[in-house]
Amino acid sequence: MTKTTLRDGERVLDLGPPGDAELRFIGRIRTPFATRADCPRQGREDGPDCALELLPELAPALDGLAEGFARADVLYWLDRSRRDLVHQSPKSDGRVTGTFALRSPVRPNPIGLSRVRIVRREGHVLIVRGLDCIDGTPLLDIKPEACSFSPQAPLKAADER
Figure (cartoon, rainbow, N blue to C red):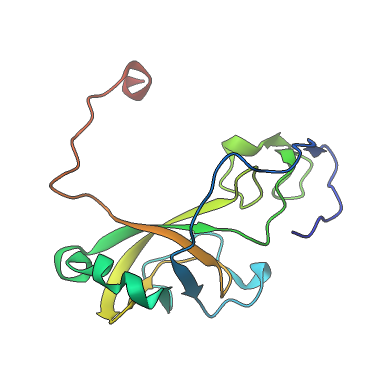
């Protein structure tokens, strides 16, 4: 994790060492983006082909995904992100907002989420479009956009506004 200079109005919090969860990386993501500056601000379905390279022993977990679904949600660990900002100035324009009001990769638990279009499967590799992360990013999970086992949640009061 690289800590950069703070922008005006940004504020950090000493969270201490993480240690209350254990995640297992299921593979790595291959993209054409070498640095954060190379990454698009949000992934696009017409973006470049990218590869979700699962550990070979997890290949059976992909069965039915590429054949049954057009899109999936990909969760990944933004391993190069700082984790201590509670206020951020994302556009360097002097405006500051709370971390949880942003989709910034800089957050206490730097979990990235992209909705991708599934292109094809090649063994233990899923080719997708729509990612916005650096090449080599650790892969956490893949979930179909929706499936027959996903119940539709009723609207809550906050959703009706």
